[in-house]
Amino acid sequence: MANTGTIYLVGAGPGDPDLLTLRAARLIEGAQLIVHDGLVDPAILDLASADATLISVAKRRSKHTLPQEDICALLVREALAGRDVIRLKGGDPLIFGRGGEEAEAARAAGVPVEIVPGISAANGAAAAAQIALTHRDAASIVSFVAGQCKGLSDQDWAGLAGKGRTLVIYMGVKTAGQIADKLMADGLSPDMPVAVIENGARPEMRVLRGLLAGLPDLVEHEGVVSPALIVIGEVTARIDAHVAATAMEAAQ
Image 1 (cartoon, rainbow, N blue to C red):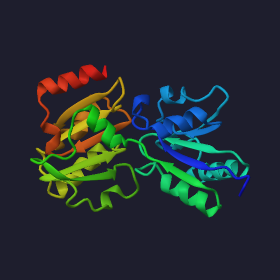
Image 2 (cartoon, rainbow, N blue to C red):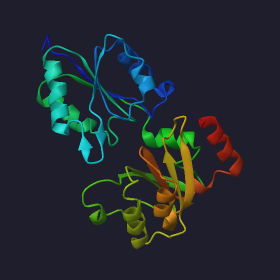
Image 3 (cartoon, helix red, strand yellow):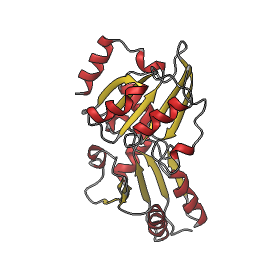
């Protein structure tokens, strides 16, 4: 074990380098090997030393640079060769970041692993859009779900959205129509307010608002592309026009 490196699963946050934790920034600046996702902003990668090796394992819909099993094998192989590995992920490693799988692979191989949390995509995007995911007058429950997964229509989302609740959907752009139909079929009002946050907390951020019944048309008409989050709940309608305009100006 003396010659074994450590795998650091590091959250890069929503994109702005200023939103990195101090621990994350220090690890990136001192790294010799960084294995990073496609959602990690180039400005964050620029913090790395010119001598650092950067390996992209970007995932795109139906097209992965490396399958997850191969990514785990890469991390373990490099650590067993004596190198510390920074596994850099957008958002937080343990919220739809497959950090749990990579930590399990490291432990199974006897490799030390450390998890460095990051500001999640939901927290970062909602803050940039000035949407309070919880509010004493509107929501006391928040749920995170993945909108791009096998058997979406068969999953039980009952009770995740509605009065007093906020539902945040990751990876839901391509399945926005199925998501809206599913929620309305489960009894959610077609008039439930929704927001789509594209490129949250980045200079090119867009915040689009509408109603649940119009979600598919909103995504299609506005040409929404990933990364984007869908937020469903009364909290999305609480921001006034002046605050919304100010938030958009600040993001531009």
